[in-house]
Image (cartoon, rainbow, N blue to C red; front, side, top):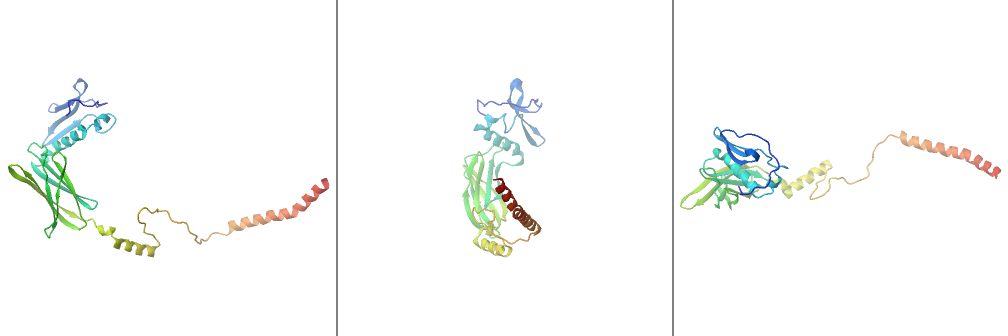
Length: 252
């Protein structure tokens, strides 16, 4: 925590549990941030808004994301043993690698440059080696772009001074078929649309169809009614127009 905190514009009035540790307090020692143990786990309570009008000045301060990253790591520490832990996830055309290095108290171990080896299985072929970047203290990550389907093992190691290196590994199955983005797939789509009357849109083409003339069957009675009405008006004009003009001539 920095020595001077930004103003907090509101919080929920509550009381401190007898077994809780108070970390931040407001007027009349009202608890703002507190923590305690529950069974084998840990709990953190924040009586203001994590994101909102009450904490708008906190959100813009650099200490705020660090506060919550450390808080989450402290809560999750009982679930992980000290050392290096690897988590893999699949994204768009890439496998995302996240490694967490923690000590016995659950604090992040900073300053490492973990090396990740990506190995395709079952061939045990080395596909790539990556250096993970440290985004937070003890939190390292990188992404591996791939178009090869199958199972991968990621081995991560971090060298230590005067100690055995930290090592961990995890596996993931990459099932995203990137052939849908190839020219061969576009040709298949074009063949399909030619049979169904559709169209393949590439780039920023509009979905709006182009106007074109088509034949369409319609009922004839509205048109015939309009024609009949027009003929009636024309017939009335022919019948009464001469008499109207003759009356005007006599009056003159």
